[in-house]
Length: 257
Image (cartoon, rainbow, N blue to C red):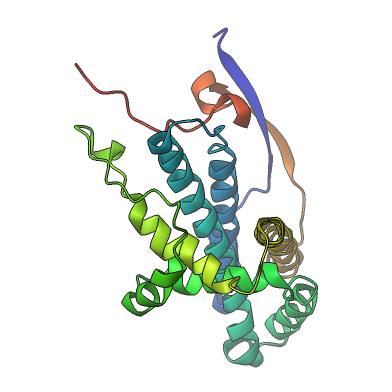
């Protein structure tokens, strides 16, 4: 018991009988947004667990970067999918329901604050060509933009999870960014644009959380006539709770004897 940790939830108690009182379109909408917020929160947490310091070993650094960037790309793409869900609903499905129409209009208006600039455009390009789709056409376009210093080795291992092929990362991700930033002369400016993508992820994550809360207020709390959350302690073993800096994801599986 000495290794146990406490976590706390603020719990809004719901069961399916509650949801059966609510229009199906409203349940479907809040379900999609709940799905998106849960995915994004999980991915953000997983991303923080990839913050290994780089080393002097090219193979180790390639493994670190593959872990780090696959999570970052996925996190970014899930945010983009949430935006697309709201935007498409505003133009089509949600027009038939005044409550959903108003909620989506507010969400899109709020998103306007983070839908401009390099961060948003990079998120869009990465989602289209380096995350949600494997594109032969994009790969060919990227080839001449591959940084010549990239690691193109193939690393195989007895443990399947320890195999990495950074050539793919070089062509499909790093070169895609370089193609986008082909007119940028300095490394400092490219680093600045990369950070703007990270900033967009954080801003869009905040927008998604606030949008979900607004939808929940109108589609769940108001019709059910309650909005009380109960603070609930949760005792978990130390393996289930930790600080990100002390709980980094292993870059390699330890080989069995």
